[in-house]
Amino acid sequence: MAEPRTATVSRTTSETEIYVDLNLDAAPGSGITQVIDVKTGIGFLDHMFNALAKHGGWCLTLTCKGDLWIDDHHSADKPKLSDCALALGTAFKQALGEVRGIKRYGTGHAPLDEALSRAVIDISGRPYCVTSLNLTREKIGDLSTEMIPHVFHSFAMNAGVTLHVDVLRGENDHHKSESAFKALALAIRQAIERTGGQDVPSTKGVL
Image (cartoon, rainbow, N blue to C red; front, side):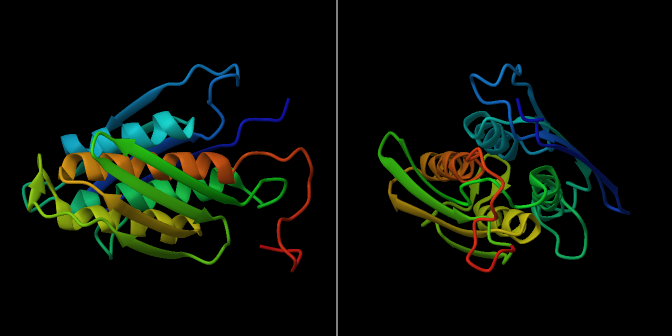
């Protein structure tokens, strides 16, 4: 049996303290008990990361202590400082290691009641992110909806992946957001699935 792909990232700045412990190989049938413990200080963001880990087949511990009294921007995404999504993307890239012996591409569709989302990912080494979430509310719980695309973007940039996330239909912003994170989880799970070989999934021979 192949060794689980794991990473631990710990970062402390003047405004945030972030800790991530990630195991990419805790899906049912792996023999590993899935454990998820997320505490970012923003309840809805916790809920989204929980969904990502659960349906992605990960074990995930993620804690973030930040200056939330300023605004949620510090924990969700801050360009000059590491944050939860940045740290998670970094941990993902470290845990995955050399892109060899995996499918590389993944597509996921996830419904939640009236909402339906699609995520497509390429473990390409060329970070890029496009989102179309069609969110209309200012906030969901304590999380500003304008920050949700930044979460996807920050993850993609630091994970080194090309990512497209689209909400195809929906009315409730909670449902649209959650279906988007679940779609991403399914896409990632497919993309990082081991093929049983050691080939680099690229005509260039390197990623």
